[in-house]
Length: 188
Image 1 (cartoon, rainbow, N blue to C red):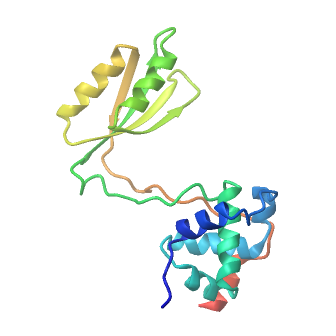
Image 2: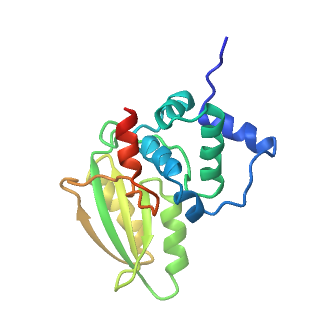
Image 3: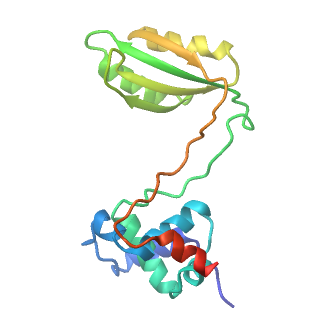
């Protein structure tokens, strides 16, 4: 009986066995059309099994596992994440908060942003404001509590998100390799 291992389990097993070369850089790996094709397939369906990936790119499953592991080791694939709907989880309010720290408060704003679970993103930016935060809340009433914590360290400006016409999406896979998309379409 065959056991279907997850990509993570396989990658961890290979890593423990020392069968992976860390010599590949991300730019070297992305010059390979098959690697780009694998990445595009995984962007389209991160849950696709190794056997399906192998069939779609015309390679053996062990070769695909090794390529995926190399992409992870090189930092091209940073993780396998679950995309949850904040509204379905009871957080219908999304706000963008810009923070301008008072003198000497920059590290404290960073620490606070990391500590507050409502803050799902924190970006250090140029301009008058030093930070841009994305915050999810169960109601507008909860916004005051979050803002008050940051106001102890500087000035805030807040915008409530009305809609998200372009939700978070993956980056385009640019490569010097031949068109991986055309190869993918031929195999479907």
